[in-house]
Length: 306
Image (cartoon, rainbow, N blue to C red; front, top):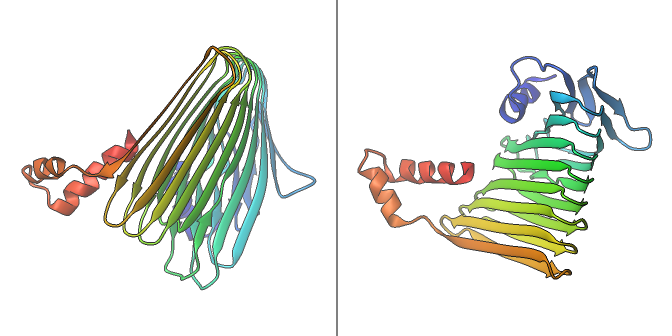
């Protein structure tokens, strides 16, 4: 691994020189390190670039790391990863990504992930995205997630875009069986001329399933963000979509939540709030000794972490 990869690993996956348990480190489209564990097997896909990760039924309290790093311009990395989570398992998946631009060509990572979570399993999926480098080529990260939750399965997704990503197009689709729960919290920061698009589409196909989609974003400079969520309540269920955004400078945010109730007992709600930082918040922090810039940074940090 090169030094840029090691720096990214520290930022997106808490790398401390080594991973314990199962892991696969992807660097510029290749494998820079891999290890399976007793209950988590990682293998290369045969028909396309990517991985097949199989987690045994009843696996408890294990973590699998699958970070991906693009360390220079003129790399267009495309990877297909499939996760098969056995019945009753309780695991964490850490899948951060970093892209580095050092020239005129783009640096891009496109991760297409499919999740098959069996009955009663619980998955915590954590993903951080970051861009770096002084090149003029765009730093792009375009994740795609396709989620299938069996009865009583739970998937919690925490996704964070730390900064430095010029273009991102994030697409998530999901299908939920009876009593399944999908909880997605995303936090996105854009600056300068950066753009970010989020598109959620969730089909609730089993009784008493629950979906909770929460997006928090900050658009600074002349950046632009677009948020679209679509929840299809086809059975007795609960669905919630929320988009909260802060504008700084000339930033722009377009929020378009969409609900479809196809069952009389589908309970669906959406919320959207977009605005600037309240002046009294800045004043209050300034009275504690912070500069206006420091106060703004503190407010944004707290907002994205909630």
